[in-house]
Each structure stands twice: as C-alpha cells, then as structure tokens.
Length: 231
Image (cartoon, rainbow, N blue to C red; front, side, top):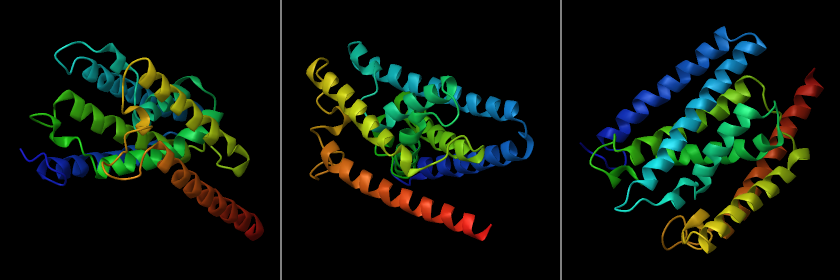
C-alpha cells in the first residue's frame, strides 16, 4: 500500500472524497429548499465533523506507550478550526462572529492538507486512526465551509475584520497554555515552524494570512459593489 504523497492511497482518497463532497453539495442544493432542511444538512455535517475531530484527538491520546490526556485539546490551527467550526454551526446562529474567522482559516487549511498531507506515512495503512481521522476532519471542514456559503449562512464583509484578530489571539492563547502548562513544544507553531527550516512559525504565518484575507475582502467588496451597480 503506497502511503506516499500522491501515491496510490492518496490519489484514491482524493478520487473518492472530492466527487462525493461535490455530490453532497449538489443534492443539498437541489433538495434542501426550506430553512429547516438546510439546517438539518448543516448540522449533520457539523456533527460528523465533531465526531471525527474528537476521534482524531482520542487517537493522539492513546497513540503513545502512555496515555497522554493533554493531547485531547487540538494543538494545531487545523485541529482547533475543525473543533470550533463544528461547535459554531451546531450551537451558533446564522452568520455568527466565530464563522467570520473560521471560514477562511478552515478553507485554506483544509485544502492545503487534503492535497499535501504530510502525515500519510505515520501508520501501516490509511485506516490507522490518526491518519484516516486526520484526512476526514480536514475534508469535512472543507465541506462545511462550502455548505455555509451554499446556504448563505455567512455574509463576508470587511466590517467583521476584527473577528480574525480575536480568533488568532484565542488560538495563540490556547497554544501558550499548552506550551507552558502541558509541555507541548510545537503547539500552534508558536516556536516550531510548520515546515522545518523555514520562517513559518505562527508569527510568520499571521501576517501572510492577514494580508491574504485583507486582499480577499477587498475583492469580495468590489464584486458586491459591481453587482449592486448592475442591478
């Protein structure tokens, strides 16, 4: 079984999950016409996302020779985003402030990880729980974000820019706690870079992300203004 990047397993995973996600979105758009049915779809995806991120964290708790409960709290941007996004959809209202931070981070993080999963070879097969749960919670995060836009559950606007600031602050606060209290040295890449030998710690990632997000907001506002003019 080839577990390398773009090996047999990776290509098979992409070949199954991407068309399946597209089919789910297509059927949801076609048949979920009422607000109630759309809410059922959204909360079902959110529930699945919560289950898989929980399984992923439990797999980390029991992965080592000793039980390490400090691993139950996500210590990465993607892991925490999957958890927070599932809870924000399950218990939050439409267009709540959490979504304005989570959608972009979830979209970017999930796409990068789905197409560049560096953890594929960590176990004997793709069904090794840390591996399959890692792949699936990223895929479900992508599906969740797309479904939010499909059903108009979020209106992206520069007026909610502050959500990004609060979101990053919250993540880094959790990471600082994990480092200082739980001894997790690589939490949220505050010290350890995302890619070894690069500047991509949280402090290097943040300005790149913020600049990209600001550019995206600018484009969205321009498109929105143009549509209003046409109408």
